[in-house]
Image 1 (cartoon, rainbow, N blue to C red):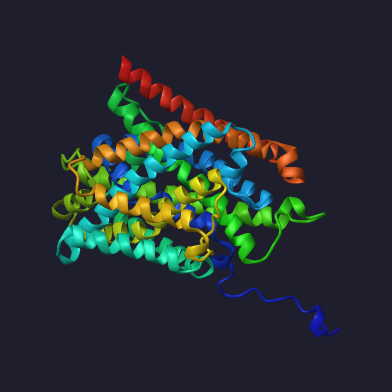
Image 2 (cartoon, rainbow, N blue to C red):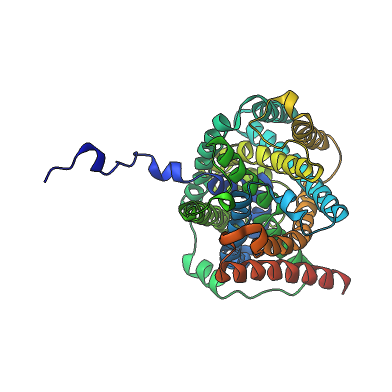
Length: 428
């Protein structure tokens, strides 16, 4: 029997999968920013394959905590700071958001500087002028381009990260030794090792990612004129499934890129005797004589591409946190006069970050300090997030499932142990 028009199954568009992915994919891509690239490069250069295990360890916990943040945003229709304020005193929320802003500004400074250096290495010219172009362009796009038009651009920029997979394929890697170190690590018990472990964890599981993804779910909801899930009398679980797919793909993608970077720098830089990396651009430059022009070019272009993705996420997450903490309008869809405070934070964070590039502060110290601050700040924020997502009053029938609660608290404990280990090793 022929089906009538009304009974024919709808054909999925060719780009259905790409449309399905959104905040989770962008968040995962932004995690591998130039600062992250520098941290992963230093991990590979200093310890060889010895820290590959951290990628496998963090992946399930990263997926879980990002699922928590995304669900909080989509279910409540509010960003993370607004929900955290329900369980924490105002002074604590303000303090944590302030630390988030400080860490993000250091990250932005390192990212803009690395992008400027990378472009100078590729085409020549002055580093600061290139950095100014990147900083200015980032602010203007966020302020004057509505979210519904800017979001697809950010999603497209995640594709640039595939250059690091390509980079790993251009160098000779002793796979048996690398995989053995990743699966059966032999840790070194000293402060340098613990500092780098915390830096990798702080880069991988970062507070700015929590704030960003929760707020992007709110932006997506408002852009499609949908209500928070908790306000729906029934249904809504397909949205939870969509979030699960989006977040899982995004975090696995993010960690695959991190694995590729550590693998490449371990195989080339550590094996070649280069064990100290000051920035992502320096890692690219160090690869040139040891691995050739193609490897260098791919690595350098990746720094620029991921920086264009990460700077808006860093500045935007700081703005979301501050605006929500003080009750200001917080949306990239608003026009500048209607959200002065929100866009002011975006501009200020980017401008200050650009300005730090003219100081004598050691770039690698900014990177490590930022990652360590992220690791310390992440613990209380993750703990409060778990209280929020487990609360039936806040989440209604979308209260987190036991497995998600378990992995979420596991990730919180992991970050706490890493920070304690760092402090203990430094004092001893």
